[in-house]
Length: 294
Image (cartoon, rainbow, N blue to C red):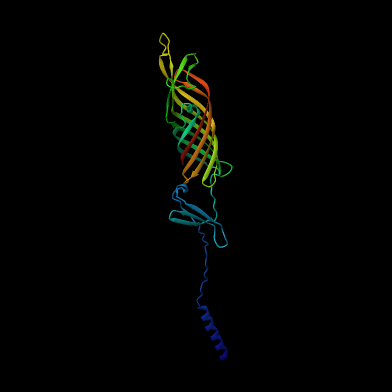
């Protein structure tokens, strides 16, 4: 009996001890996946940044593809997931040129003038086509033809000496001509770039204008050749050209030029009258130019 009471007391004490034990709550850890994206901030357009070169490194097993931008005294490396470069495949190029050279004209050779210096300026546009090294171009050029002779018919003999008749049959006696004037030219060229050299060939049209005088009638009675009248002498040339350009920098180039052209007629005109003579004229031009691309 006593033994049973002892067992009952031990059972109660053990029950009370377990009932007072503190329970520790379970801890649940929540992990959030954070994805970091690279962000590149460009403060000004890429075309205004002085970039020496761009290096693209392909993706390998350990690294993402990367883009390295090399600037003067600076090198920037960017890791990227993908890279897309949008660039016009066949761009336009615009520029200007200054040229100097000399003409050899068969008309003025008769007057013992073998070479005529000129200075010119021009604008041009080039379009890359079919291949990155192939281009076509068009331009507009104007030149000042420097005077180095003034032929007087009264003192010398030439094939221009004699009488000419205007459209209203008015007679004009040739008096003088000078080779000072202006030349306007429109070339059409094809280019092929080989490293820093760009040879080209093409065709062109050219209008050259000179100053001449004739002796005609002033209209007073009795009619006589009593007045010196000024006319512009114009020749329309068509020909071909060749050019060899060397690129010094991406902006500046120098070039050597040669052209040959022919005219079939010489036209004399002023504000009131005009007339022309059939005359085959050949002109060779040699020059050098400095080109600037915008």
